[in-house]
Length: 319
Image 1 (cartoon, rainbow, N blue to C red):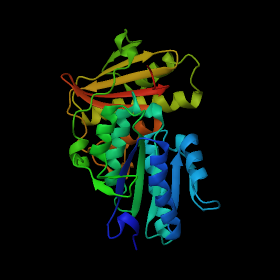
Image 2: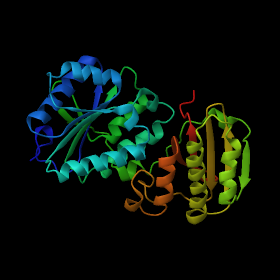
Image 3: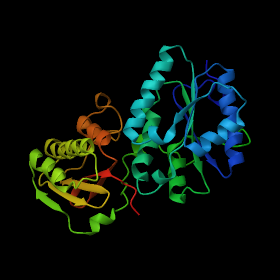
Image 4: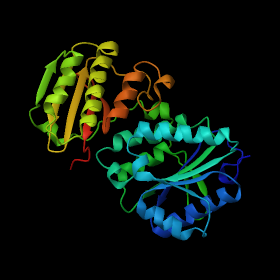
């Protein structure tokens, strides 16, 4: 039986918490967490060290809330979805009628990589809807950019307020519409320079070799292997599902490798491709899923010359 604001709701009850002070965050989170424990529901916090400590200090001593390391969990959107789907399925298998989670993204994720986290926030409305989940996503309005807050209200059906109200968001947009909208990523400064490699219709082996040739020791060997696989999957996907011609460009900086693969096709039909497990997606799902698992940032966008996948290895949080 569902409890609290989600009582009577079927599927995922997804809320934003746009707080203006620590006190406001505590005013929303503590009743949410205490209510979950009182109802015998699995109750989880997934936040960075600062806010995890804030909530630990505000909660009654000994309350059996599960604290997860938010910074590690939210390393990549597809990985977070995979982790949470397993967590939720395990709780349901053990008889949970509702699971409560409050989490947050780290501040750097609200900058140049927000495009794929915005996709995440929209996609989870579909990805978690088979589970009796009530979750809150916390955003500090003191530090969150205004365009990000606008996206938050478009990707969360409702907002939880410090006074205990749970109000619908008028700008909430269905994921199938939101994910289909053009969403140009922030241009990486490396892309303003001449590429280290510029290949027309490369083979998969040539794509992988371009990555290995670019590496100069700043990435662990396993990361280079993973990224070479992601790049070759991007090329294979373009040949399989796109249209010629195909072009691969690669840039390398002090702390990252950036690769774009462009073809003349329209891109994937499935708006969830890459974010959901491959067996849950349609055309091109497996390749995009691998890319999202093996890269530190994936951007999908359309330009006059066609559809582009941009992959980043290393540090994607460029200035």
